Amino acid sequence: MPSDFSYDPVTAVDEASASGQTAAIFADIRETMGIPLVTSIWRGLAGMGDSLSQAWYLAKPIYASGLPEHALARVIARAALPLPEPLAPTQLACAGVGERDVEEILTILAAYNRSNGMNLVALAALITPPAGSASTGAGPSSAPVWPPLRPLLPREAINAATWSMVRHVNAFGATGIDAGVATLWRHLAPWPGLLAIVHAAFAPLQVRGTIAAASAQVVALSLEEGARMAHLRRAEIEISRQARDTITGYVHSPTQVARMVAIGHALARWLK
Image (cartoon, rainbow, N blue to C red; front, side, top):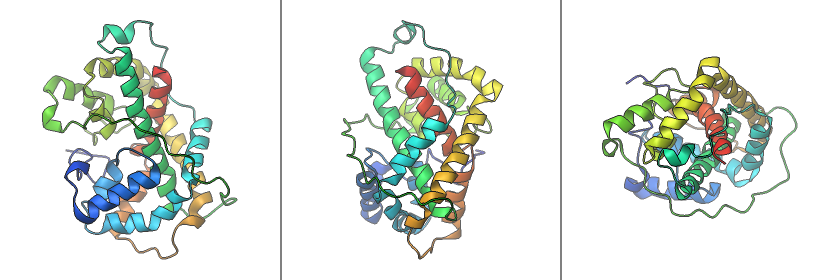
């Protein structure tokens, strides 16, 4: 399957099946970032020899500083998010999405938005030469308290009709319908009615190029923020070529995580 990624987010190492050093690093990532799940960049690196341990060793001081959280907030404040027309008052309810569902969906979005966004700016710092005034000051904020999230559905647990909708919404901001499926969309698969509404609402923004423009802007702003945090990374940069190329593509490509940062934050704001 063609993919924008050098790994497949659907088949990347699953958190629940991780063991040994991989499971320990995943736990450290969750604790350090204040997140309830590990997104696909780390799970993808886990399938590349020692890449996970190498990359996390180099990047952890950046995350532990607390600065990526503040850098992400600045990126989102400055970016022109791709916001659709407002929802009709009963639109979600008519699609079988009740108030409790919306609350759960917003929690899932918050988890991915924090994780994807902080990964984007922190990993930008890992591979970007220092530039601008160094980010200093504000330390880590209190980590959010996360309620239990429902398990991420594996591909085989999603019926054909819903998977088709997942593929169609995943095409937003990507190179096509068969681009690597971002994990967020699989986590929202229990609500096919929501996915249908999202598809109808965001399709005009895709056609007008609004999503692509927002994704490119998120990349540019994140690289700017990353350059200001680059002094925080460990001096010894020893990482496999495969891991470096994977992280570079992840950070620089508007069709990888940047599109999900733009769409995820827009979707959360829109649903609220």
